[in-house]
Image (tube, rainbow, N blue to C red; front, side, top):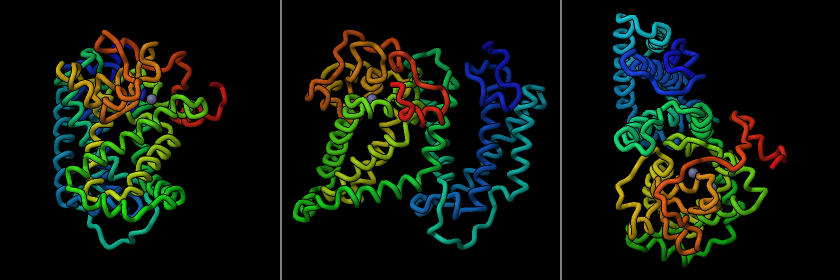
Length: 383
Ligand SMILES: [Zn+2]
Ligand SMILES: [Zn+2]
């Protein structure tokens, strides 16, 4: 696709991929369009908080701060769109951004009043999607631009739409996921509770306990991940994750829902049975949430992390990019996410004299290129 055709009509934003040429208002146009679209969704969440916000999350954030963030986002979107329109750049895209902003403002903008609402309705995690998209794109695109591994790889690289769809669905279904995971944990793990062990774990100093959570979680992750590779029936689900041919912060979202649920049930089940406290689990969730995105990012970490002893210690993009390689020496290797030493311990670490793999994806490139067909793929019995 020729870059000059990029980003004309707003619908094209979702269909195209490639670098946004600088100097034509394309980068700013996409930012304006994205922020304006997010503002409309945010207004919707304010109007229907019982159906579009996450109970666990809304207890933690300050709504007034979010209103300010929304106002700033709308001001930036409006400013960029107006300047681009005055300069006659990307009129469709910027015009649509302004139209979306008008819809958001007409629907109450950042000032929508929120009354009392019930706490136990079924919901979509729209607030979680918006906040994580805003925060993660800001942090990770910045890191990827500052320390790129593949310098020529654009933000809108081929296949970004599929990964983005996985990102959207995984976030919106957060409530349903939580119900299924909690239900499954009680059904599958309650028999294993041993109160004296839980008491002992709860009595550990905080940092010892935190290290314990990280280590136990990654050990469980290692073995479930390895099972997903070595058992052919499970591989059909996990192949979805490995079908990404471009690695960046969004690529880690590409997961079959069955794998997302089962991995979460096994890790959280073991952590719950062992009796780790909520405080240590909360810190673990933040660390593992960052790490899960970071190891997929298009980032070149300092060389010290690629050499002993650090490379034996922690999972980095170097380590996990190898896991996604379709090259022979990388197949069924580097399973750990947090602690690389688990792979060295069990003899599954990649041994290569190169620092990075040359190609990502599944051998044979058989994965369909649409979200729904990827979810159906394990049941089609082709592989
Ligand atoms: Zn894998
Ligand atoms: Zn991965």
